[in-house]
Image 1: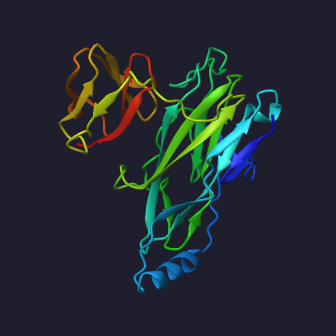
Image 2: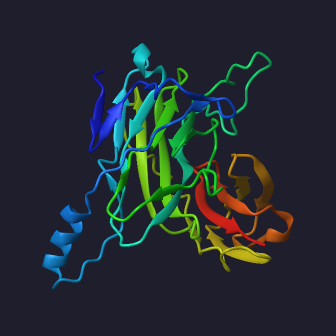
Length: 295
């Protein structure tokens, strides 16, 4: 099957950026290339809206789909890239968070290795942002001031790469990446990319019509003490609730047996940071929300 990439730049090799590796994260140190595009987008926008320019963080050439075959050895490691532009008039300090919207089976998350340092069975992933390629399975980039990516007004950062390792598992994996200010993790711009290896239908799976979920938003946000999430299931359904930290580790799990109610999240029992609450109903694809704990 020929490789096909839609709306964006895709490449299935890992470039050696100056041959430098980060000994702590076993990844590449990645230089950041910036160029000015503010005059292209904002001047046009100002002309069209009576001289009042409204600009935002923009993803340039964001890859939507990568298609390939497991029989091609070059697809053992797949990397896709897009640029992140600051079309605002302010300097932005951005982090990246990753959510697995849909994964093949098996999927190595949380990422584990055997005694010899080899990955456990299943596909796995990582991403690169700023100077680091993060450890496999990491859900959010570092928020330390020296590792947050700073983009000046009108400039573009080219350091982002999404790495996907099929590990011999066919199917469709969907990864969502959100680029947000470090001061507002739930803000920013999100984009989902599909990795399709020998897939009959390169698209997101859909839940069974009989598996329906109505739920609200986690409130209050950010979580500083006790927050709640309302839900409603169809009669006779049950579900499993899991909360994962940014490293992909399950930190809390409960069974949901009632058709409707509240899920209580106690931030006092959690360290500060980004978390993902996942609700799986009758084995269908989990529904997920992200939330932030602050003390």
